Amino acid sequence: MPFLHIRISGRSLDDAERLHLQDEATRLAVTLLGKRAEATAVLVEEQAIAGWTVGARRLPAAGYLEVLVSEGTNTAEEKERFIAAAYGLLEEAVGVPLNPVTYVVVREVKMDSWGYGGRTQENRRIAAAA
Image (cartoon, rainbow, N blue to C red; front, side, top):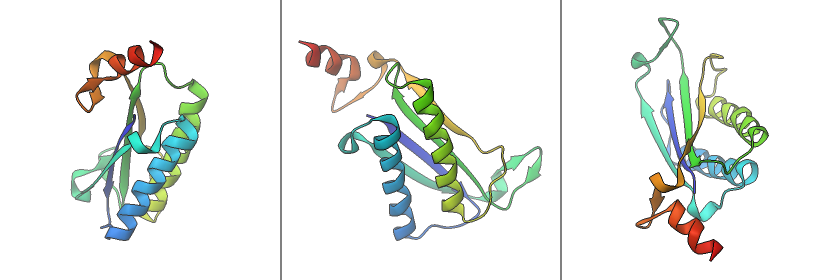
């Protein structure tokens, strides 16, 4: 049950490009992190490039991707592969090489601290084990 939050700056995405980005982010969560597509949510936001700097310098384009996953559900190797692939996806989305200081974050959340459909992930884990 990941939630992916993607921020893009420096260009506007049309509906087809946004959908492609959402589809590819979901595919990466499924193939590299072992998540279920039907429980993967993706939010894409566009932000003005004027609000983004690296080393106090403005950039022509920028991106950021954060994925929330349940704590302990992925190995370090899975997260490393995901970060590399997600960086490539961000570069594809903005259409130019990104500054190396472009962050992809895999944030692990305790299972009793998040959920969907009114149930925590911990509740789902306990129910599945019973």
